[in-house]
Length: 322
Image (tube, rainbow, N blue to C red; front, side, top):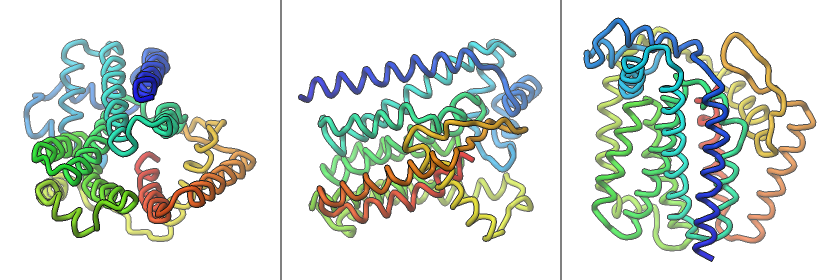
């Protein structure tokens, strides 16, 4: 069983990359992509002014460096960015497969979340837009890798997982400052894994993985300092009502329709394409979500905290992609 599940998972990733290749090579530079190209053509790629520019509230030296190197090799040639999109998509997919294998083993159930993650339409806009993908795909790869390393560190005590987890986290930070959420998600995932499997308490998860947690917290504190130095804080918004509306809409119009392959309809505004699901799609999505939650709660024990954690992560995660 192990071999056919692994082969099926790799086949799904290969098919996913074929679909992404069609999307990538059928695209072109758009909006912020041209800003990245323009800056790479006028500034030194290794200068602090270039790498640590306040790009619309983002700190992303890794993304700037990759975009700059590709631009210098072949300015305004879409082949380079398209190839980089496929490489990043492959890294994120393989990191996700590794994390799912660590959590589930080579069981057939692994294929369900993998297939959803690979083929959900909600991931398409963030992939096809080069500037956005340079942020999100490295973050997703780092997130999956660190979660897997956290579980392996807690489970085996292998020190190498603390090192590789910290390096992966730092790599994610270099591409997207919102990767700062990764250690908190990884700790939650490791704690939930130990809770569901009955292999440890929250306190034990902290002590077994303390090398990883402390290094990640130190990196987070340092990166917060860098962010505060670089970014113009006058653009920050503290409108709680607007934030709540955005959170709720991200669930009703984003996550829930996505469970049934939605949104099925896209609108083209001034920015990136925006999903516009019909009411029937949202109702169907809620029905599927309720059914999945009910079935898993009946068939498996200790999954209540897992669903609560998924809800707690999904709202801000979805808002990051809007």
